[in-house]
Every structure is written in C-alpha cells, then in structure tokens.
Length: 117
Image 1: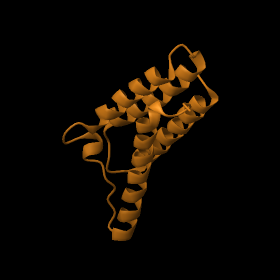
Image 2: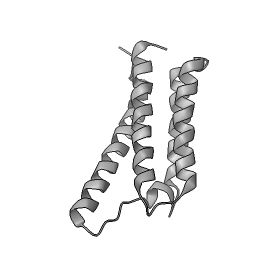
Image 3: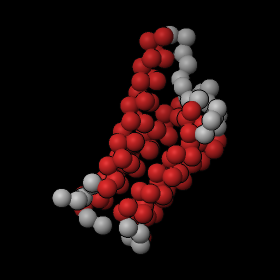
Image 4: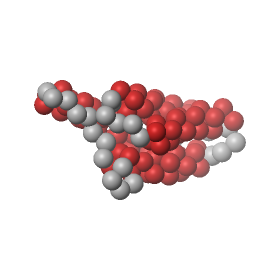
C-alpha cells in the first residue's frame, strides 16, 4: 500500500471511531448489532493495515460491505437519531452525526482515487 492509501485508511478508521463514540453516547439507542459491526470495521481496518496481506481496494470493498449492512430497513442507521427535549441540542447532535456519516461515505466513495495520480 502507498502512504496515501495508509493515510486514507487511518482517516477512515478515525471517522468510524467517532461514529461509534456518537452511537454509544445515545442513551435511546441500544442496537448491539450496530455497535458490534462498528467495532468489527475498526478492528478490520487496523488488522488489514498491520498484516498488509490485502490490497487497498480489497480492504475498502470489505469495509464498504460491512458499513452498508448498518442500513437495513427499520433498524440500524435507517432509524438512528438523537432525541433531546431541546430542539437545538437534538438538531446539533443529529447534524453532527450526519456530518460523520457523510465523511465516511465520502472516504468510501473515493476509494478508487486515493493514492492514484
């Protein structure tokens, strides 16, 4: 893997860690499958980088497939939101979570361009 690809995987791993932190902080969300899947994604990225046995595109293909499993109907991230009695707090938390999701999706979308001239 190139240095750019490794940096890209590091960035993606950090975004998933931020996402996991936000999910865990939501007291109304108790879907263990989502938390377990996020942990699996984070650990997979770390392991795949250390082992260096898979290509960069293979790693991202697997991460993308695992991430997409979090969007099944009526559960997972399809139904995920923060609730607070204060509209402003609720809005801020939900916007922050959407921002992290957008960053993850941008990293996954750009998988074929990272490290390529």
